[in-house]
Length: 355
Image (cartoon, rainbow, N blue to C red; front, side, top):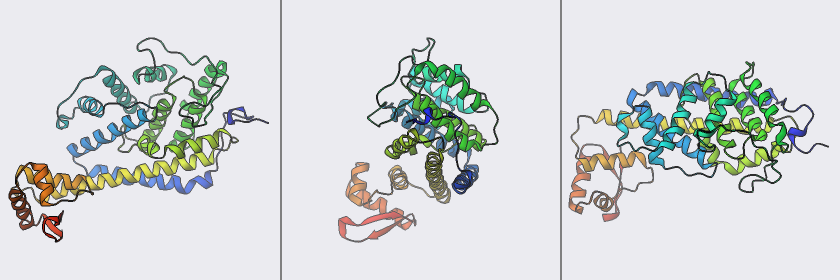
């Protein structure tokens, strides 16, 4: 009896229960529409800042899932430069990071283009897994042991069939199907993961393929949510569900259900983040004519960015390197201007919050 999904008669023609998936798929589609609606309310500068933040997180987390930690400042700087966002501050240069970012942006912006073998090799090289700019090739040795950090995953072990598997996969990928592109994103992720055509970097390429089809589902070249960030948060569950699929039959309903719930959570968090951005923008619009000093602007922004910030006069003085009397005057001025209020009383332990 076959042990793994790719040994099942009928592989790679996977099946799933559309009726079981229909509700959560509908919720995902609804969330995508709501996020697009809120995105349209952002001004040009706010939209660029939100995009910069989300793409930075997405690239960082996709690499972290592969066990690589990138320099956040270099990724953000490269994205800002290539997206022509001047408000991002000082730009730092790094050739490898620039190549990774440029390839990611070009792929997502060209999301309607067919996915080719050459494109996948180029992604792998740009992501730092190949011998850039030398030609790449598929792995030529069998994988007999669990891959990764003892996560128990095994992949197609006969490497001689990988070229044929990839040709068949790419043909399916580029064929127009009635399947919803969100579902196709989840199926593509699973199929590529189990083919495992390279010794390293397969997960990052699988997520790139997933992002292409999610972008097609959105109809926008760059979306404001990060599935990689959400997968990183649920990494143990992600690996568990993949193991279940690995040892199952051709029905991948369980994997797709988890994939959709993970995507829905990413969309909810992105929508909450945009709501916060809009509220902050409206706040500053309301008080744009109120004269504030640099210390007050700094602390107000800090309160907006951190729900856990416990604002006291001593904390204000420490952050701004000013005297306690100056801190109290700053705070009282904001109270008089209806920007802050006292949360509780208790001498030096009195806390303040935004109205």
